[in-house]
Image (cartoon, rainbow, N blue to C red; front, side, top):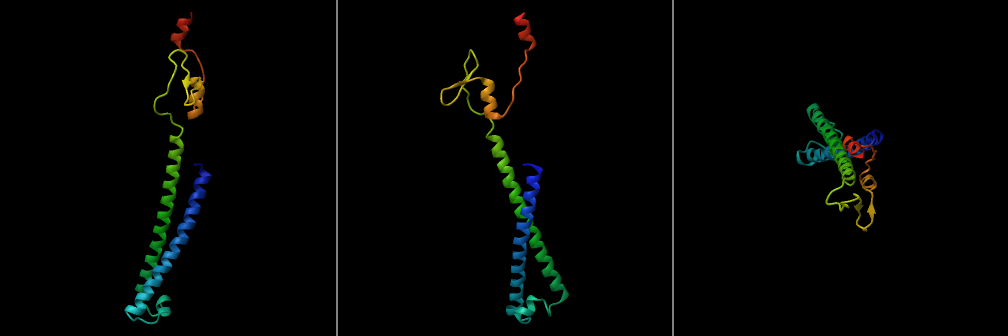
Length: 146
């Protein structure tokens, strides 16, 4: 994944996480207001929702909890996105790996593909893995050629 795509993914995840976190925090705040209004009889629903009449400790605790909900939601969504991106990268890299048994000619070293066509080893490996070959002559072969 390129740096630009990674930062774009991070920005998108942060926006999605922030939006989801704000929704969850608002739902939490509303649930707390319902509890205070109807169970503890601290006043009307609107009064409890707007924290009018609630002490500063209650307001601070609701704000802190709502903030933590937003932060954790952002973290969870971005962690899922990064895990998904890592899995895609691993899958893309593993698709370029050769594995199993390659049928190869004992004499000319050509490789047979599943359609029974023979290819030069360099061409077959470069097509299936992305490896580029360069040729030279090793010292043993130079001695044999002379």
